[in-house]
Amino acid sequence: MKKVAFLTSGGDCQALNAAMRGVAKTLYHHYGKDVEIYGILDGYKGLMYGDYKKMKPKDFSGILTVGGTILGTSRQPFKYMRDPDENGNDKVKLMKETYKKIGLDCLVVLGGNGSQKTANLLSEEGLNVLHLPKTIDNDIYGTDMTFGFYSAVNIATSAIDCIHTTAASHGRVFIVEVMGHKVGWITLYAGMAGGADIILIPELPYDTDKVIKALEKRNKEGKDFSILAVAEGAISKEDAALSKKERKAKKAASPYPSASYEIGALIEKKLGQEVRITVPGHTQRGGSPCPYDRVLSSRLGAAAGKLIIKDQYGYMLALKNDDIVPVALSEVAGNLKMVDINSSIIKEAQNMGISLGI
Ligand code: F6P
Image (cartoon, rainbow, N blue to C red; front, side, top):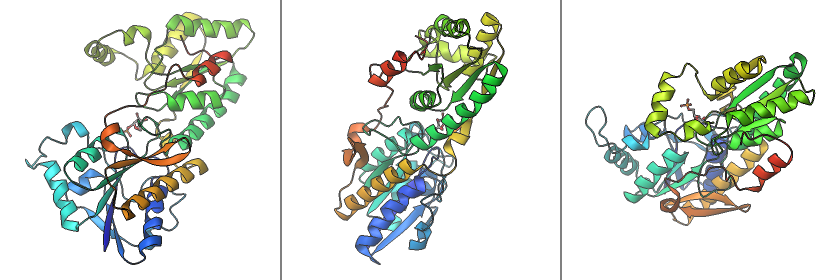
């Protein structure tokens, strides 16, 4: 009897359920009744405290299109994994005990960067682990794409589309703040898809004068409204030059809740134009996965199922040049995939006259 468990960890995203369904369907197709699948509840917390349930084939029916995760999730930061829990217990030991108690052959972790590091840690500790790269941020190193990304891009683009009509009617400057943690993938794609005039991403610290100049140029051209797509992690050149400590102190003392509000205040001060800010926030992580994510997650899931059948562990399943390939966790864990500032999409955006604030 093959015993496999799923665990969804960190911020949720679209197509988590679709990915688990992909693995489960592959395993049931191969093993029939000779496989037991377990769902670990609420991420690594469930693995630590033995919170899990045995799944049935019908649990994986009807979930292809369902957002969120049927298992629940939680954030258990990697940096605290080696610290004892509130009762003084060794968290890694607890997780290994649950794995052994169920008698697992493999633990499939669906998670982002931090969860991947813990997956690698468990793999180093001798557990059979596979990782499926999920996150709206698309920042997982070693895969061309993560599932969740395109669904989030769709939602952020819809937000910009809706803003377009009201911005044009009122002749206002609008800032749409887009998620993405430390990287600008969603902002860049949604910004281009939504026709933003200015796109600011963390990988390219912006020059405030250049942002103002880009708006002035539009005004001179008789365009009385402008749209900025600003990544939640966007950073000015001045702030990028500060040390981490100085940045932290500046942020703590800032009256602005985020970069968008700071930029908005600057535009109002310098140009006297009315600015409105829209933050779609967690809507970007919600709802049904888009068709691309359903296909990608199903493919990654099916490939993970195949590795389990072959007893090959310690890998992340990755999309590379449209193939799904295994990549050693030890090679990718701890790395971040940022937007390459020399990539052609950056040049294409600039060639179209989109300001990147540089
Ligand atoms: O990693 C996904 C993500 O949605 C980021 O884009 C965002 O910065 C973060 O999670 C928000 O985290 P939380 O849901 O804990 O507020």
